[in-house]
Image 1 (cartoon, rainbow, N blue to C red):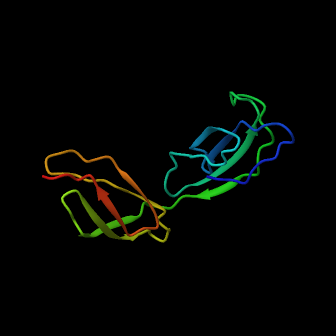
Image 2: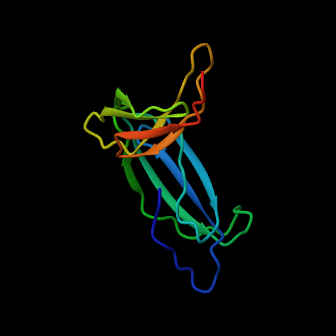
Image 3: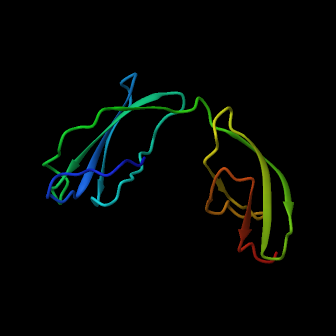
Amino acid sequence: WAWAGVQQGNVTITGYKLNYQSTDGLATGVTYCSGGATRDCSLDGFKNGKTYSITIAASNDPRLETNFGPISDPLSVDTPGSLPNVYSVATVRTTAYSAVVSWVADGGGQQITALAVRTKRENEPWGLPENVVGPAIQTTVKGLGAN
């Protein structure tokens, strides 16, 4: 989540506190983000098909324990009802060490903003995910190596 800058007079902003709560009250959390110049922060663990209310407050305490300013108006965020479906349709331009993989994606009415691509060799575990920023319909998988 990213937001516009905060002006706190001559006091240096050292970080932010983000509070979130699902509208059904079952999911709540607090995330602290250090660095006053940084105006983005990750909130993880949201569930599909829920609405969350998020607020933010700035602090000038280097430990981010006290001195939080006023709490922002809440931002309402709706999560999609389900995860998107992605269908791999082609592997093209393969070499001994890489392949360009393309796909068709169905976001279930939502724009797909990122994907994770993982590779697996026969009789070996899945590799670590390689993140692909979307919307995208292909990526180059490198480092495959020879059989």
